[in-house]
Length: 103
Image (cartoon, rainbow, N blue to C red):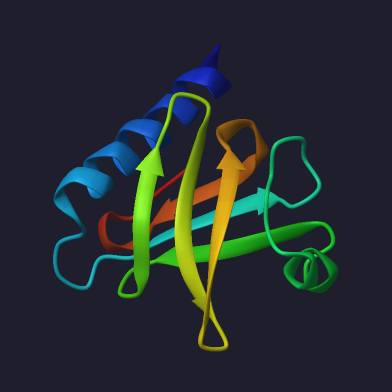
């Protein structure tokens, strides 16, 4: 129950960011298991990060959508924009360093 509640905090935070954006120099760090069911990322990223990956939402991210079970976001990797889908169940860490908060 606690894990579900904590992932609910992440979901609501991402929904807020999708609607209002991030304020100032305010990053969000999200770490997830790349092989979990429902994770969608390009093959070259899956090969580069076979177990887990950390993404940072700060300056250059686009199209953040926070659904009930997963979030989607477009990020730049070596000047190539790629769309990622990450179920909340695949998350292993969420850190908001600007307010010293982490899950």
